[in-house]
Image (cartoon, rainbow, N blue to C red; front, side):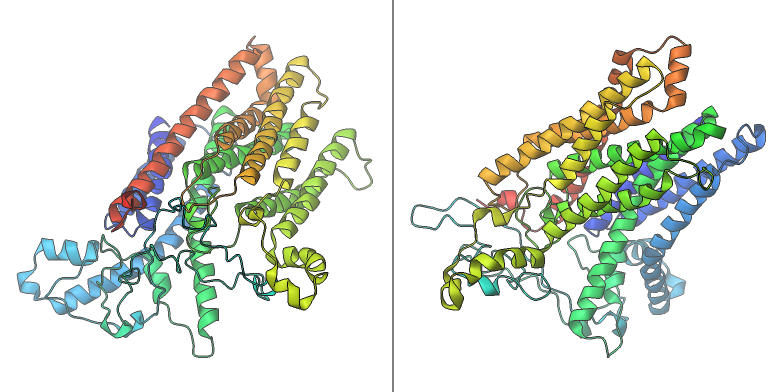
Length: 546
């Protein structure tokens, strides 16, 4: 069992995040990271199967193994996109070389690393895809006295009617700095060559590897699909792939909780529903806190989610995603509170409490998504713009607050949940204290997120670099620690602590804080490693521009 835990931990929390980071820059060693991941998974599954053979079935009906294999199958399906270009490269290599003079070094460079050499000239027409040019990231320096202080992505004299398109997306150019005279004239220097000149081993990155992102780009659509639709489909495919790949890490955390439950023999019979509620909901807050801390460090800055200006022109805000998750969370939990009851049974007080919280998540999430819609914002502002008439509307300027997203509803629902659960009635005093503690932690996150909006409202983001509000560092810690305390407040855990004389609030809080600090250190290492790879692979670093 110790080997099973060690191998699976190394696979999903070390090798997998490292592989995701390498994939993001098309690093040539991404294949090695994938092989390491699956090797550790094989060792983990083997040791787990051996433990199961040598140990009596202490938890009948356990689904831990079946769920774990489902996660592995999902990872294999995602890796199939990596395997496809590898098979193509292998076929091209074997077809183009003299097998009597086979050498390992060309095989490693061509097939494994995906780098082109002179003796391989096979070309494939299915790679003809037109990709957008690669823009170099520049640092948004403060302007001099003779320059305007407005950010370059905002056109102050732009008519109000032309600020939004019919589909709710800005009509401005993708690169916010396209009209900046300080940008070098060779910004389009790295535009990729025409499709007829591309080979299967072409280096699409400074590291010269080709992996899943290139495979998704290489797919050709039928002639009846227009270019804008093909671009949209590719963007959706890229987003879905990236989301599913990163979801594997959170699925591994869920399997960790499941393994702990099965190994300790908890969550049986009447405890199942309450145990699931605490583990699932607490686990969501825990993961949400880690993601928020990663945003503070600068992760997702290319989407503008690090309280910065999006350098790629992306328009889906982090608050929209938060509101969507809150909506899905509420709409599913509304009906789950009645699991296990008979038709016609009256609603208990706890059921009404939990259902009302789920309904709050449901509709507050809808309001939050509506606020983040650019089209809805246009509608809400149209009445004041129409009062000036069609001739004067062209002189209406955007306020500075339009540069950021100030959506209080995600923080509202979490804060209200924390305040309500801190007063949740329990059988024993220790259980009340535990619920009050994690309720205050969630409420503290809500207050700190509102302070973030206050400070960002005063000084909206002016740079494409992450702004790193310190309130988010504290808020993410409160959120993650509160989620972990939520898990600790499971009825079986609290009763077992009271029976053994371990019902000590300080001990529970210190353990939660220690685990949270360890997880934050892990998050910091992963985000830093990802940033280091991008720094090494970029021809010009934003920090090198002065």
